[in-house]
Image (cartoon, rainbow, N blue to C red; front, side):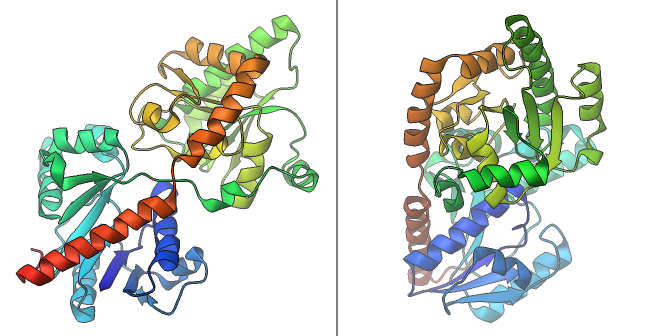
Length: 386
């Protein structure tokens, strides 16, 4: 079996994590097939050492351009692939010469992104995306929530959509932070105080503004009780310069000295922050899956997250759930997760158990089965993709 995987979006937050872990796990599970990783060869290095059956195929053009997709199609045809895995939702027609499997992480661009552009453009985007999904040999959804949204928004029959969960990167499973780890963040980032942590992309639906407002209210309550006078909020994510509203919120909330934006940090350092944090907060308004709460749980850190979208499905009973639009509910949850010792012990144990329920080995084993089913069906029928 010859499988092509589009890796051009490997540098993105959630999709990149997905591609890297699918490729790494396929390399462990399948030594019989040949894999072509189509994109910039430098990105393949992010997957670590791969067996000789995995080949980097250079393609510099982006996946959202006609030129890039014409070249992608030509490569797949030249390599005579049996199946293609496109690990993200797309709308520009591919016209591939063999069946394809598509992974849908969320419908964010059709929910929040739908407010932008003309009505004609939004309608065209919706119709072409629907066409791409209808023509897929199989649609993979990363949660039951996402599957339901695909059915409702695009009218794809449920039997053609399979839920294959994400899981956390294995590097978050390498035990707790050592003293040298704590010394590293103290020296490199000057972090030597208790903190609440947010980690993830910084976009409007991530609700970081309300997180800051809730933290400000929490500081006021803690001051009344004489608790945690040096508590900080650390925000790890995108470059702050692209989000001036966050800085304005910090100033308006009077927590200029208590909120720190660290930008991007590598996984090896992020795992230390997860481990040392008093509480992890993730009150996102919309998530197709939502990996950060699971990453924090793997370190035994209490989690406060939303009761909306896929997050109850992902967090189970291992987190304090809140209405993400209610700042004071977020504040109360943070205060309880910070100060209630019995709750902290309970959440720590439940968090470990919840993180272990999701496995790349199990998920990718099912993806591999789907590749074989799709390739076998196409070979027996002699039908190629449109």
